[in-house]
Image 1 (tube, rainbow, N blue to C red):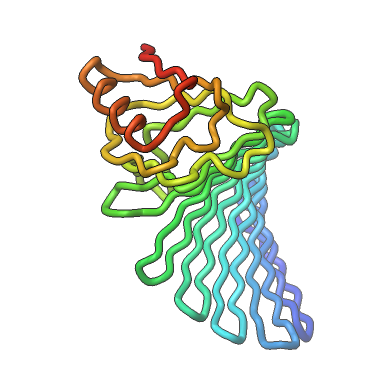
Image 2: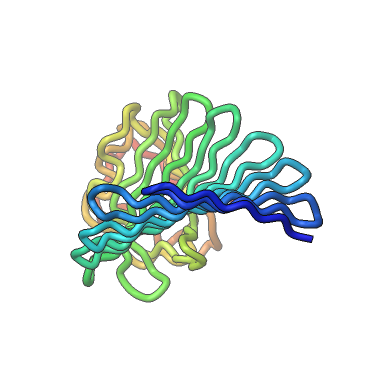
Length: 241
């Protein structure tokens, strides 16, 4: 049930395979002048879905794997894994919609330094955040910025990356610094927060609002930590459901 055609050139080996279910696979192996070898496999199913897997091994030892899935609505999901010569490992997952909206999670590991960066864009609004992994399944929020005109920011309770779920436990100093628009409202879940560093909310609008989700006990605890870290007297702190 499989038809195969092979083509050879000096630098390209291409394999075309059609299966009994109507899917078609095209596999190409390209050797570059610098010694890098790239293997690209494209799978097209009868319903029009396309999955492209590309693996590149460079002469210097760098390895890259990129998998792109294109759905029927035109949206794409790309997963990238890179292992560099110094041992740095990078894993990134990005979803792009036909409208141009996108969401990405990029995780970088080098020795003891482990960071996760998230970016979410909807229309003209973009929110990006950076987290430092402090312990198993725990992260500290070191930066979160927004381009929203209303200056509204939501700090998530957890983030996900490479199949793992990390709980946000620490809010770092100057985490709001760098926003294109001054944050006016910050919404946060009290559950899991154990530390708020000095000046964590320094760049919040002077008449801003911090809305905290949690029990009365959790609200009281994090409110105390936030005030101790330093806050304008005109900033309001509210408990919300």
